[in-house]
Image 1 (cartoon, rainbow, N blue to C red):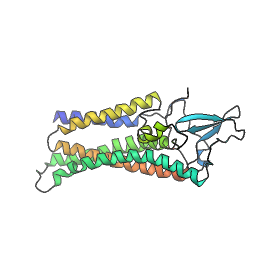
Image 2 (tube, rainbow, N blue to C red):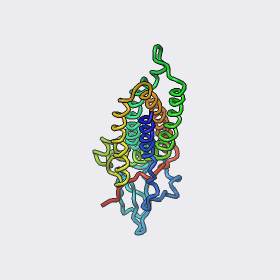
Image 3 (tube, rainbow, N blue to C red):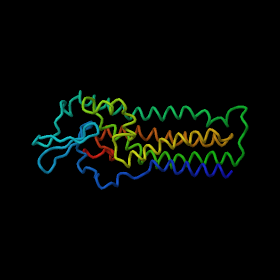
Image 4 (cartoon, rainbow, N blue to C red):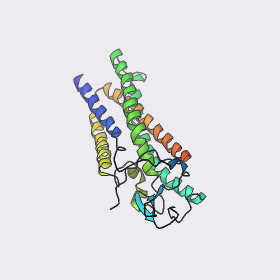
Length: 255
């Protein structure tokens, strides 16, 4: 029983890794007038010298437009510009959701195995652990990890990708870019890579657990990942409707 409790503690620390607060960085402050920006429009601002600054594919670029508007080959309000922005960000956000859905499909049958016909029934203690694990993962991993931190990050970074303006590898690897695995602040990349490697290590450890403890852990994973996938979708829809970036995209400072 002790190894099981120890593993649950490790999983709790891992899930909390998504909750690292990166928005408290002194280099980031939420724009006050972002609500006035049209959907899909690049985030821009006016510098003290009259030049404008815009986020383009994960980089800050300035223009000499005295009006303070970011210069772009396409108008931010044109249908073509909106379609391109939507396609690029959808690939980034949708790619992350696809990864999560594949993981859910792999462990979902294992999570339901104790309830299949002919399976060894769980004891009351094990059934209680099954329910508690699902609730715990839904809150710690799903709500605290995904909904409040990871999902806003993925959506915000995907919205900085623009076809024709972003670097080609940012576009081709948009899901990984959106997860903050590269072209991000040092702190963001450390958290993202630590979580990714932690997942791989935990998957190996969980596979070695006996029945029904592996099934119990997988049930919690399904609950957490399902909540996370849904939260990413809702954050993305909200961003498109309101035109607001839900979080700091954690982009590196331009050299």
